[in-house]
Image (tube, rainbow, N blue to C red; front, side, top):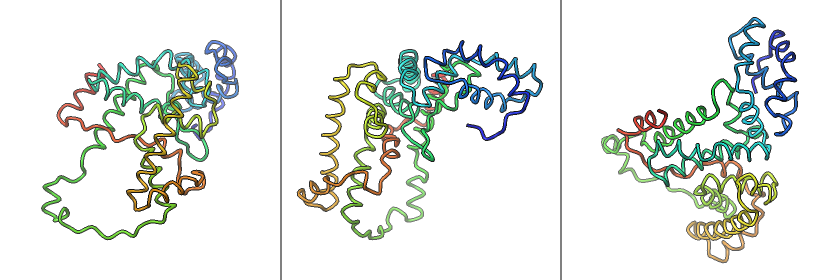
Length: 305
């Protein structure tokens, strides 16, 4: 939320229009109070350059308030809003990713990653962080999502590029330099590292499920409604992920020098006692596939078109 204080003109216009806009946007259905919606409208209007009440009124009335309310309710973690969002935009999000990535598995991976970012699995200063909180309602939510997909595709590509070329490393002698010896970390630190490593390869949807169930305290039924599947499906998914993660963590501990017995004993530690930000780990992205340097920008432009 913006820290800029709204002007009296903004407050006056928002107060005047609030009752009608709150009802028109269906805010009550998605758990958005008048006070919260007024704050959102004031925030967006304050950032807008208009100064006179007539200009502010015209600006506020031009907003897509129903989509604005939906996006901000999702960002706040409202289950009903998230269910509506998935019903309206899940397929469109995938199709936007497919137009850019041109390959089904890459498109689904891209879309899955965005689900976690849109839902808000990470936090800052104890507050949920969701990309949807940056949607201002000045254009369609569908168009905004296409832009987010395109930007994420570019970001993923850029993260795969090496900052220094192999030729440059050869010239500097970097690739021949012996690595500095590293001390073996203590067992609890190795458990934290192994846990972090296992979580790093989860899909975006799996991250959201684990974050919702273990960190946000949501029930299996709530998560099932959010994803539009049966509760038993989520129950099986959580059980399967828990067993798989345990095996991966044990294997990672063995690779780090522990015996299998020591690794099994280490798993008895409550993960919440580790020096590890589990929410941050769940918000991390899996390693993205490499993209063609010559085609990436063209794909984005074509996908947005």
